Structures are given as structure tokens and as C-alpha cells.
Length: 286
Ligand code: ADP
Ligand code: MG
Image (cartoon, rainbow, N blue to C red):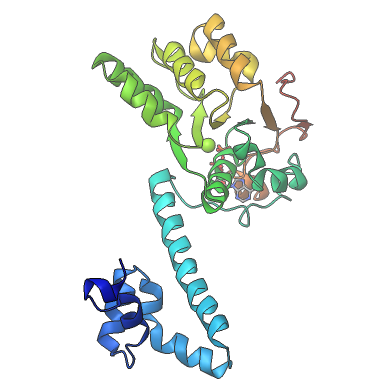
């Protein structure tokens, strides 16, 4: 029914003819629309738009870009805290010269996060101190900044959480919690002996994520030894069968970055030559 027929004023017309708008009114409208970046910087944005002689359409686009930038920044900050990375490590902070067994081109390709989009697995294998956790965190951060949900957990914490949940018949909810994110990073598998149920719990988790979400695992043990790591060769094979189906495997055989300084000062000897195994999904001899 038209406004004339209802006797109501035309709301659309009213909205179009309200200037001058008070600062408070404008502030309220921007708050209601949750355009808080525009609200907080309104004077600066308007001054800058006038200085740049932007037309109305350009000025609107420019202000909305400021709003989107802040929303993206907040979303990323929130997603980083949800990911629970143990510390900040970035790809920019990674020295390739210190780790010649890694191909920077391959890391750059992984940094595009196509493997995350495809739900692939990434295994980072190698001895302690070669930068596996550094790369895992840095690639996780890349994934967050590209809009993917990421969760970081150490292998020990993951298994003990699942084992506890299993005892309390809360396994299902824990599994779905670890199944939610697009990328699950499981760090340092193989350093410490796992609980007796570990293989079965891990298998359930990997099965659940299989072809749905990505998994990044770092380990100091080659996959051939995962039977020993899990204490169950049959289940370890089933886990690897799924993990290696769509996978990238980086094996780092360099020297420990942690011990680099000590080695430089001659306190300890240099380890044997560095070598690379291409990402074939197959492991070489240790
Ligand atoms: P890993 O997980 O393989 O045991 P980390 O990633 O924990 O090794 O590396 C040990 C320390 O050395 C970390 O502080 C990490 O940031 C640093 N590090 C390792 N490799 C590099 C590198 N190539 N460039 C810069 N820092 C590195
Ligand atoms: Mg590590």
C-alpha cells in the first residue's frame, strides 16, 4: 500500500532529505551499521578525500576500503589467537642459506596455500632444530591470513587430550573439535613415547579429516619408523595410507639452527652433508 493511502510519511523520502546531519547522528548511524573504522576516523577520512579531490563515488569506495582493512585485520588477529601458535614465526624470518636442503621455490609454492585449499597433507620431516616448527607456524600464519581456519597442537597434547576424552566418553566432541579447522598442525610427532591408545585415536582423527581438511605434521622420525612411534605397525600403515594419498613431503637433512652459533665458535663438530628428498610421498633411508 502506498504512503498516501496509509497516511504514513514516505520513509524513503524522509531519509533522502535529512541534511544537515549532526555529528552525533552520523556517529550513531555508523555505529549501528558497525562501520567503526569509518566512524573512528571520519574527520581524517573526509579531510583526506577533500584533499585528494575525490568525487562522491571515489570517496565512498575509499572509506569502505578503510573499513574492510580494519575488519580483515581484526579477523586475522582473532584467527591467529584461535590457532594457538606457540610463538610467532614467519617465512620472511626464515633464512634459506642456513638450510640449503630446502628449495625456496617449493616453500613459496606452499605459501600460496593451494595445498590447504585442496585438503592435502604436508609432512615436514627431519632432525631437531632444522626449522620444522618454524616453517609449520609460518605456513599456518600464511593460511590464516588467506582466510583459512587453522589449529596448532603438539602431538603430545593432541594424543593426551584425545585419550582423556576417550576415558570420559567425550571422544566424539574432541574429535569434531580437531576436525573443524581447515588446517590442523600437529607438531613434533615422535619425540616422546605415545600412550598405548595413541595409534587408534590418531587413526580416528586422520580418518575424520581425510579428504576434508588439511593436516601438517612435523616429525623427527622418517615415516618408515612410524610403526614404532605409534607402537602398532598395522594402524600406522593405515594412518600413512590416508596421509600420503594427497601429500607433500619435505625432508630436511641440515644442521640444527639452534646449534649453529656453537658450531661456528668451534664448540661442536659440523654434521654430515645436507641432502634433499623430493616431495614424492616416499621416504629415503635415514
Ligand atoms: P625443529 O622444529 O626442526 O626442531 P625449530 O623450528 O624449532 O626446529 O627451530 C629452532 C629455532 O631455530 C627456532 O627458534 C627457529 O625459529 C630457528 N630456526 C630454525 N631454522 C631457521 C632458519 N632457517 N632461519 C631462521 N631461523 C631458524
Ligand atoms: Mg619442532
